[in-house]
Length: 123
Image (cartoon, rainbow, N blue to C red; front, side, top):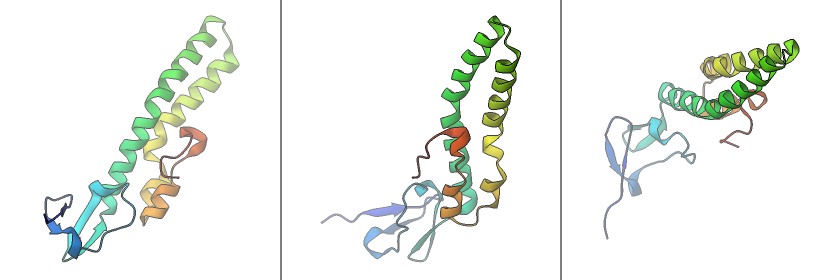
């Protein structure tokens, strides 16, 4: 039978049958090996999380550009202001204080702002 290896973020590997592995695989790219225990490197997990935020906000920003252009065409000042506010929130989402303050994976997942980004991929 072939041995299955787990490789951490630094390229270190271990026989999977001898490792203590986190149950959550969302942040596998942040795994760090210490002996036979694999844990998440929170700095790397936060970077992965911010990339996921950027991925989610892309189509939302594109859609909001359409909303703004329609408001511009109709000279709707209220709609333009609301669109500007929403786009600012989307641009600021990766810098949310809850992301930087997260001390574990559960807190990091809870930092997903559903009001701004919609449904969480971590739910």
